[in-house]
Image (cartoon, rainbow, N blue to C red; front, side, top):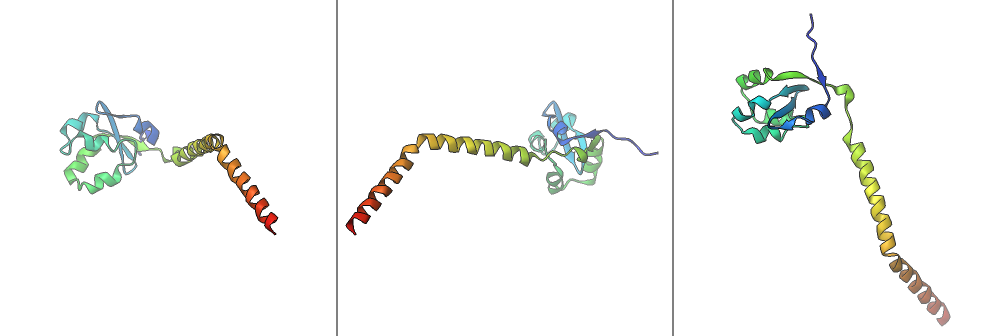
Length: 133
């Protein structure tokens, strides 16, 4: 009989990012490692730096032993829900665009005289040039 596991979104896992309440995501699995932070040989800051994102690469790059991998499984609480993936780039992009638009409006209001001066000089120069002929 298959075992049912709880599904968590990356956003849910990211909310658990303190030394008292720390979850990490490795290979699509969610682990509650808060009780292990003080015992981690690399220090708690290494683990805390990987909350809120997929920590698979960091875990693999550290070269964990077989016993460390077995220990990790004791902290397993569920799996990552891939169907509820949010694309943060879209949210960031819309915010950046709004900021850019507002900056452009502010600069236009601030430097409108420069545009008028350039246009005025262009008119005067062309008038003088045409008058010579």
